[in-house]
Amino acid sequence: MKKSFLLAVTMMTMTVTGQALAASQTAAASQDKAASVKPKEAKVDRNYDGVIDRIEYYDSNGTILRVETDTNNDGKMDEWVYYENGVPVKGEKDTNGDGKADRGMVYDAQGKLVRIEADIDGDGKIDEWVYYEGGKPVKAEKDNNKDGKPDTWVTY
Image (cartoon, rainbow, N blue to C red; front, side, top):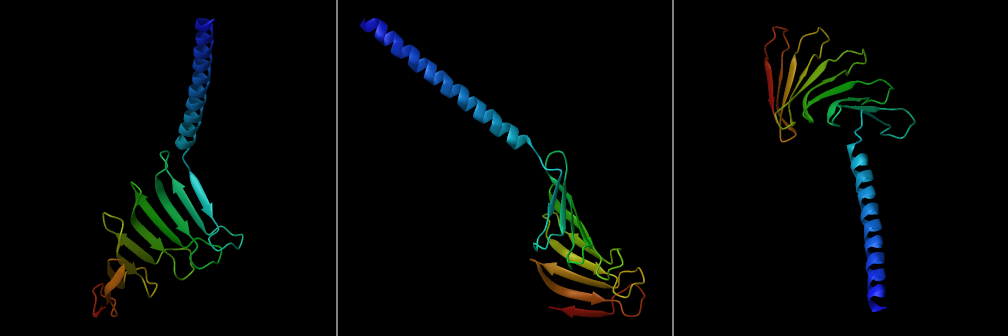
């Protein structure tokens, strides 16, 4: 009697343990499956006005490739930042509303902004440069006579 009771308890314990293990494995598989789902695109309404003002694009591994942003809330994307290995490498911005980039953003290997180049007068040539260190502007240069070289310098 004692042997059959112990055998029954052992069998029940093994069954319950087996069910718990199976449930645990199923839960782990569900988590693995959820973890393997990667976004392709994310659309965001940052100011909650019902209009998408940021779109993020991802590769098949879920690594960010590009971000488009409507920075002035006019309903048109006006800033584009491009990424490599999840790090920003270059950006462009349309500040005059013509749909074409008139500013370029340059990033270092860690993805920190180091320079903004701008076509201020709209002639298609860069005529202003602002340099950054630690996320803050440290100097600016401007080409006033349109020879492609700075002739005005400001240090911050």
